[in-house]
Each structure stands twice: as structure tokens, then as C-alpha cells.
Image (cartoon, rainbow, N blue to C red; front, top):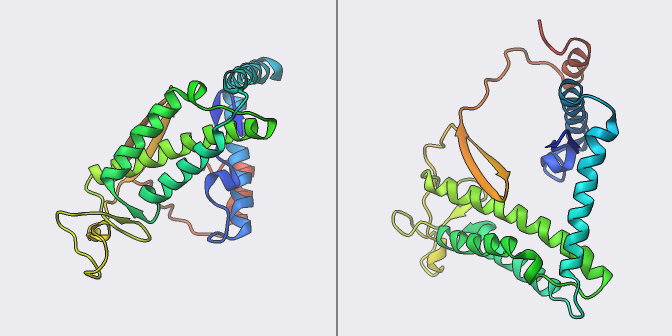
Length: 234
């Protein structure tokens, strides 16, 4: 959801949804996200709602209409570009992550986003819908690849379900595997939290210390009720 020009990740968009998270978590995330957005609106937005939301919405619709006009063609290529992008991301940025391939494909994604309207074409209404989805997918890939590249630049190594190719200090679990499977485990686990901003076509990563865990430990429902009543401010 958006508010006052800001984007708030809520529920499924906040990655708190799916087989690895209980359904209630997504609902709770939606409640918290909606409340935070409402607080932001109340604190910063003045005047009637059309002034705050109508103009940005109209600008977004104008931008999307211009993109549709620029991408319309007799013969479309968006399906092929979609398949290529999905395959390349799976090849270099899935469970097996080669830093060199991540950098190379990241440059391709950056170039395609820069020339998106000139290179992506839709020949039908169905393909036009895929144009918007392809753009969203490339933006997501740009963010993920930037985060992965920055992670390895800060000395990040393989951990969890992600194996980063390390040809200098790594080993292969089995000798018959390709060199891509050469990895080194992260023994230290950097305590910092990586954050990423996307603005004006530029992804900017940064690192910060994690926020302290509150001393009180209670059921979510009780904390949420207290937050609604007092804002959890003593």
C-alpha cells in the first residue's frame, strides 16, 4: 500500500506469507503495516484525500499509459524476454549464486530497465499485461542482485539455503561437481542488518546494527491491543 508518496510493505508483500510462515503472521503484518501507514498519513498529510492521493495516482496512470503506447507493436517479444529473465535469475541468483554471474546479469537488468520502452514490445492485450509484470520483475531482480553483490562485497559467504561460489577459499562437497559448487561457509555471521533503497533508478545498499529485542515478552494479541490503546509508550 502507498501513502503520501511512501510505499508500505504489508502482508504477503512483506514476505510474511506462505508455507514458511503461518497465515496469522501475514494477517498480523497487514494489521501493523496498515496502522503504520495510517499514522504516517495522519502525521504528514494535510488537506483532502484527493489532493494527497489523486494527483500521484493520476501521474502514475499517465506514466503507465505512456509505457503502453511506447511498447505497442505488431509483433511482441515480451514473452521471450520474460522467459530469458526468469532463466537468468534462476541460473545466477537462486540457491547457487556465482558473484561474477550476479554482477554480469545485474548489468543486463540495469541496461534493460534503462531502455525498457524501446526494447520491450507487446503485440496483444495479454502481452501488454505482461509488459507491466516484466517491468516489476526486473525491478525486483535489480534489488535482489544488488543485495547479493553487496553481501559478497562485505565478505558474505554461504549460509542457510544460499551457496555462494568461492573459487579462492572454498571447497566442493563432491569432486565430480562443477566448480560453481565450490563454497566456503560463513563461520562468523555478520551481526549487521543489510537494508536496500531504490530511488530514481538507483539501488543503494547499507548496513546497520539490529534493533534491540524488547525486554517484555508477551503474546502478539496482547502487544497489539496495548499498541492500539497506548502506542506502547510509557
